Amino acid sequence: MDLVESYKDELRLIDRPWKGFWVGLLVLTLILLPWFTGEDLVYIATLVFIYSIGVQGQNILIGYTGQISLGQAGFLAIGAFTYGHLSRAGVPLLGGLLGAGLVAALFGVLVGFPSLRLKGPYLAIVTLGFGIAAYQLFTAYEFLSGGRMGMIVPKLKPFFGLSREVSMYYFTLLVGLCFTLLSYNLISSYIGRAFISVRDNDIAAEVLGVNLTQYKLLSFAVSSFYTGVHGALYGIFLGFLDPQMFTFLETITMFIAVVIGGLALVEGGIFGAAFVILIPYIFNEYKELVPVIYGGTVIVVMIFEPLGLAGRWLKIRLYFRNWPFR
Amino acid sequence: MGSLYVLVALGIVLIYRSTRILNFAHGDMATMGTFFAFTLLSFRLPFYVAFIGSLVFSGLLAILFYFLIIIPAQRREATLLGQITLTVGLGMIFQGVIVYLWGTDSKVMNFPLSDATVWKVGPVYLNELSLGTLAMGIIGSFFFYLLIQRTRIGLAMRATSENLPAAQTLAIPTRRILALAWGLAAFLGVLAGLFLAPALLLDPFFMLEPFLKGFAGAILGGLNSLPGAIVGGLIIGVAESLTGGYVALEFKNTVAFLIIIIVLLVKPEGLLGTEFKERI
Image (cartoon, rainbow over all chains, first blue to last red; front, side):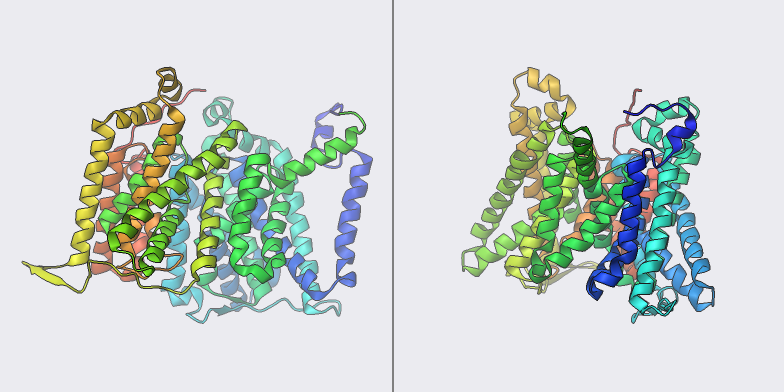
């Protein structure tokens, strides 16, 4: 489409002036949002930001590297409870988040080891087993999970004289933006291209000099780092943790978010997160039917738009850019 | 319990072998069928009517899903991951419908066999229900074996899963055969569900765990091997009850999955699976 003259041009995220304008406008809207809307919308938006981090992480693993993983709930739980323990030990907020991410990444590498030999459904079942094992360990050992009543996690202290909800909103917005920027840069770098080549054909990738072991493990580590941070933020957001929050259903929700949002598209993570949060919120009055709506949308999206919501968004943008030509 | 996992695993392997799709809706399909049987029973119909009715109902449901959703998706060249996701979506729809129609509270299903009748054979205690389950597992697997290995339909099914274009050239109606595979798989799942319902309580999520175990058994035995599914399902069942009895009840599931991880690390294609070969 565009003329790329050097590698530096290729790496640029904002490749035309209007794009910078739109992104700036979007961020500005998000910053000003709490002044114009009610508290429940701020609450929902905060949740979307938190989820978009984890979903982006899983998208790096599932969408870009092509390793089907069903252990998200396990990584979420590890991240959340690590944060809980760290904050009890007096570690400050950012240190706790980093710690949660790192511990989850460590387990990600452990789970990633089977991925060196297993493919597709076989890997899915191993990671699924990990998710279930993590859930059961947290349920069985009370010193890990703080007992049946759950673990109390200190909520975020309000800053700049804002209310607690609004400061949590800004904090998650900031973290979410950082991670989004990180994933864009990761994907357009050498590492991202290595991930994509592993997905498309791992043997060919290895022949071309991509160290398969390293990059598969790296992909697991990065994605579980994201998921761990997601778990920690979720803990801060709710103020308490309980192993029951990290069941197989949570895994399915994240998986659906990745697929509906759009595989192998960074925007997909955000769209997917917004989808899985907004649908239960909008259809609050028909709670029993939420899974039906989820499932129905999944089927419709997969049949008519395999690239997900973000793929549709790209097509709409392309249409308007080329308008009136087609 | 092991024989139930065998039935579930057989259903999953059947679908995987013929269409390369992992069916995540398998458990929910079975739940749907079992609830259908429950409804028929609550109309005071005799048990065998409900039994056959629910089997046929769920088989038709699965065939319908194949024709209405999987085929249009394949026409649009959906990826494999996309098709797997379709089954996840279907599972969620079933779950929602079940919760909507029957509510979330647990129900007790009437069943001709009960687990209160206990016989003592040597040092082991056996109850009527688990014996019935065992018998059902064996009979089900046996008839299934006959169908696959000894009939023309079975031959067509094997041919279709072996090489789809070649089967089409030989005038095998592959689409109908694949639909039949889906129907049969749902059939097996409901069979497991019907025998499981009296042992547990009937609620919308009662098949989730057996489904995961059956899934694990299928993987353990090798996803493209039907005997593998039987072996895998039995191993999972035995391993689980042994840890439940001798180690700790909480780790029942964890140990089952640990075994799978270890087996897969040594033999990535499952115990009886065939090795995958790949080309660039």
